[in-house]
Length: 263
Image 1 (cartoon, rainbow, N blue to C red):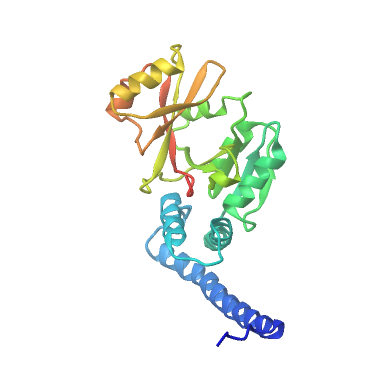
Image 2 (image 1 turned 90 degrees about the horizontal axis):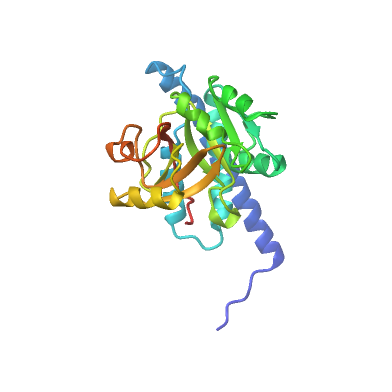
């Protein structure tokens, strides 16, 4: 016999029950942020920025790999970004500074999608201002990949700052448009891209070919102001001998980030 479909009242009652249980679990999870902060203080890490990009990326991949019937990738990522950022904001200072270039609104949108609504956000008039704010405890600079600025080249002289995220984090949300920078330890997440800058005058294709002979897959991301920004497939640390052999008097790794989760 055909099963009788539920009535609208039945569906609404089930939604109400799910909403109540969701709120209970979200409230419990949010409350654990205080326990995390207490544990970090007890371990002597209470004065450190709690952002762990690689750990977050691995969590996202585990969640997205789980069987789901109705929750798509976008919903899953946005929900957990909000939960993670709210928890981080409860543990200590956490603030965003955005330089959006010619498309400030898009860069602010990307920043909120990546870091949620919890941290305060201000816009910077110059990329230098966003980088300076990233050096303050709990600071994250989100800077547009505008073709008119080689702000990323400044990171060669800022060894404490690293690129740790590329936005958007889902390729269905658009092409890479911004990078996030902070004073954080950049660790491998298992599926990463590394950002490398050089002032080499050689054509990008020749540099890519040279890197490939050392087993490094590279692609030019931006070229401006006499500098080139490449994205390297995989996780590479500053000082890697293979990259050190690449051309350029002023060159180096400026950070790494998890690849878009749906790439």
